[in-house]
Image (tube, rainbow, N blue to C red; front, side, top):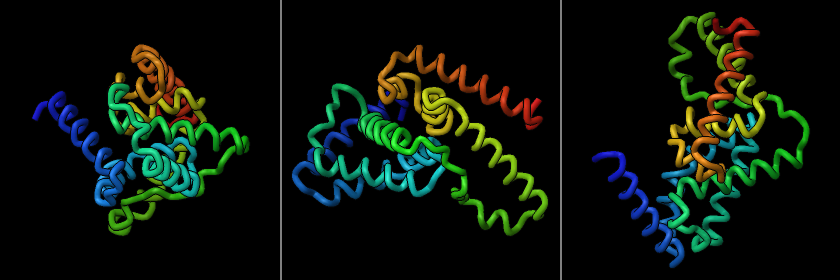
Length: 194
């Protein structure tokens, strides 16, 4: 199935799920949650660098969805964009409320089995590089970090990210270009890349 058809199919599927959710169908909520929980959590985790914050943001997103499923307007974009928009707004409020830098202490690593089989020194080096990369992403200004996370990590198109960020696709492209340049410069100054 081509990307356009897939997106149209997913959009109509999401609309039906929301109709069922509005009727109080718990299976519809479960399906929405299963489909979007991990991407929303990853976005919040990458934005905050903190697992607890990411869990709270994710919970808030789905609480809002279950409380007001009719608030979603399919004419304004896809359900994914709507949910990422809620997550973005919740993140902004939480980041403003805690103006302190959050240390990156939480681990989000699905490679535990792989690590056990690899050379310990190689794994430590790999983990150090991932930590440096993640801290460098966290150091980016929020507008650039959002574009980088949505487009590069969540693999959204510019128009999809533009819907979430409430700006033109060209602005997304510009922010993403700037974020990549800033990230590369930071990593070069730390002698992590050439």
